[in-house]
Amino acid sequence: MSAKLFVGNLSFSITENDLQDAFAAHGTVVEANLMMDRTTGRPRGFGFVTMSTPEEAQKAIEALHGKELAGRALTVNIARPREDRPAGGGGGPRRDFRGGGGGGGRRERY
Image (cartoon, rainbow, N blue to C red; front, side, top):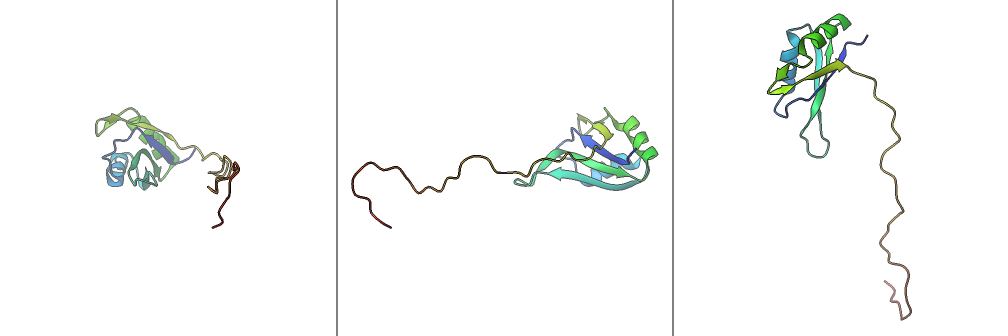
């Protein structure tokens, strides 16, 4: 069993310190991270907390899963490894905006 926990349904007003304080009552918190949106810089509503032992992680799950923090019921469970996803982006034809087609008439060169 892992000591890393997924924490979901977080209020957007929660800070990493708030998260650490909530879990510190149930064991030693090694690390607490909130996930932030890359483009806006705002919280995404979930994070990860790493406890020092799997036993402390289980204790924190039992104590905090479903408990309210800042008005929202937390989802707390063992973090699963990240799934491999294909490299992003891609898709669709290339669009280079050069026009194309035509329909008679004279075409000017640029």
